[in-house]
Length: 409
Image (tube, rainbow, N blue to C red; front, side, top):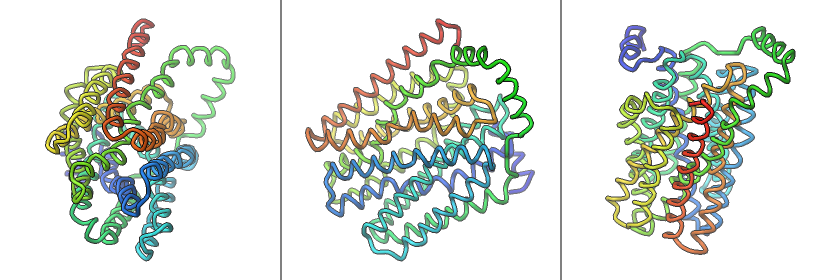
């Protein structure tokens, strides 16, 4: 892309050239995330029980935890670019091997590893975007990252809805090509970022001299940060149903075309991300991060209720728009909240830790859902999601009140 072309886009969206380049990388990188949904479909078609698929989905969620820590810490020590390329090349090799395997345990295992590695690279991408963005550009930066995710996922979901059932290996080949493209883009589009060692050492020395004072100050000012991330577990439990509970809901409505409708609903979900991204960001720009997440919680609860209390596929499509809007607000403002409360020398580690805390619902969600679905049924599963989103919203309201009372808002 030419410098003049980047300049025009920069003026339009209000972010630095490097963010536009990272946005392009995000588009291609996120296409592999769709594998999480289709692994569940492959396992279901292989006659795994609801509890078994729930357990495997939870394993997919929990296994990315060490990956996030490793990638986040390495990106702070060795650089974002080196870390991303190293792990991305591993996924390329594993995808290439899977093309030569039959649809069985080994293929499923390799694909699960690919999903885990891609999920673990999230802190690296977010940290890179923060590093290259100015403070006044942060909200637009996170909106661009979400836009990249939505474009990549909407496009690959549409491809999956029409291609996966016909030729899944051709579908995997497309994912392989996109992974290669994201690696090549990262190699050529921007210089690597490594936090300055001298600056880091100065800060460490200063903290050492005032260890007790600084510890108390940081703990007092940011003591709601971990609580905030823990509460977000409720919404990540709900979000995990995109790859788990939604498949069973669609199967109950139209069993003969499950793969097609799951792909189309994913396309609607990520298209809504694309359509609403910059609009939602601009409308909520003046709100604090926590106020925006309260709004997201209300929208989330409405979306879950639409899915729980009806079996009309058109209303399910509408629910996907509510779901996408809520998750969009959470993703943008969660990342921004962390950015405002972390320093550049430990940003990758911070993002890894808080991604793990708030994202642990990705593990709890399928485990809880598999049990509820097997023991009680589909309606009870989605009713629980409505309740969980409502509780999460009320808890965030409590955090907002506490921070306002203590003059943090």
